[in-house]
Amino acid sequence: MTGSREALPDVDGSGLTLGDRAAIALTEYRAGNHQALGDLVREATPLLWHTVRAQGVDRDAADDVVQSTWVALVRHAESIAEPKAVLKWLLVTAKRAAWEAVRKHRDDERRRTELPDDSPEHPMALPANDPPPDAEVLRDERDRILWTSLQKLPGRCQELLRLVSLADRPDYRYISAAIGMPMGSIGSTRGRCLAKLRTILDEQGDFSWT
Image (cartoon, rainbow, N blue to C red; front, side, top):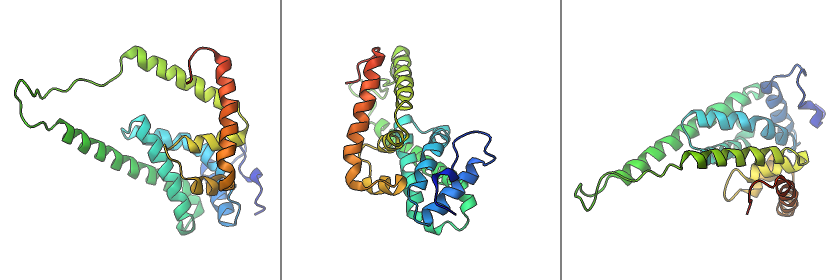
């Protein structure tokens, strides 16, 4: 094992499955190459996100679940017995966290709808909070432009912004471990990357990004 990032090819036809690349990343991470996990985070996050969403988790909660899954991998990296099973481990961990998020959400909804009485002054029916269809279309279009613009950034910026965006208060310690960037550099690098992203977004001219 050389510790080279070339062990995680991004091109199709390499002959390596995502599971193979995940195993290589974990092995290199254990050997001290913390940057190796950055490739895996970038490549596997969309799969984890869609897996979590498939369990019925909403968009915002899905981001938190995926973030917690990567944090769990960093914490348990040394205890996973078989590196080849790491992708399955990630998927199982994400699903379990998603089920717990759905359970908590249902419990919260149940508590909010249990009103004290059913009098005219306190009707049981609550107003719908769902956005109108046109708002959904605009949000989807904004998301598409945002992620398309993100892909125009250097790979290092893409890795960092994806991780930072997964939580309202990201844990720099785990981000540092995942992508091999010193904690003291994350804030300033994030600022530069966001500035580059804002420039690209401003060139779109279709939305206000403030």
